[in-house]
Amino acid sequence: MSSPLAAIKAVLAGFFGVQSRRNAEKTPIKPIYFIVAGVMCAVILALLIMSLAQYLVAHGGGQ
Image (cartoon, rainbow, N blue to C red):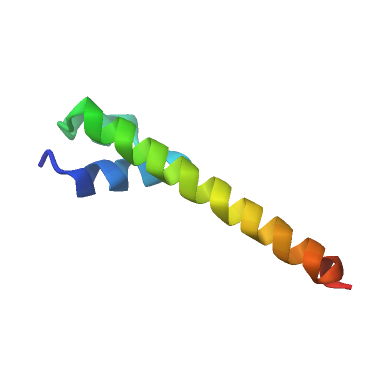
């Protein structure tokens, strides 16, 4: 199952630390899929954090 969706699932599991080594080793995924999925997830995470920070600053930090 070498698909971009499998790579995204593996990267998300790695982000949350729930991917077992055995499961990661048995899933044959092309390296380019891991790279693209990892960069996409990192960019989305950074955008979410920046959006949350801007919202909290604009609204007085929840006061």
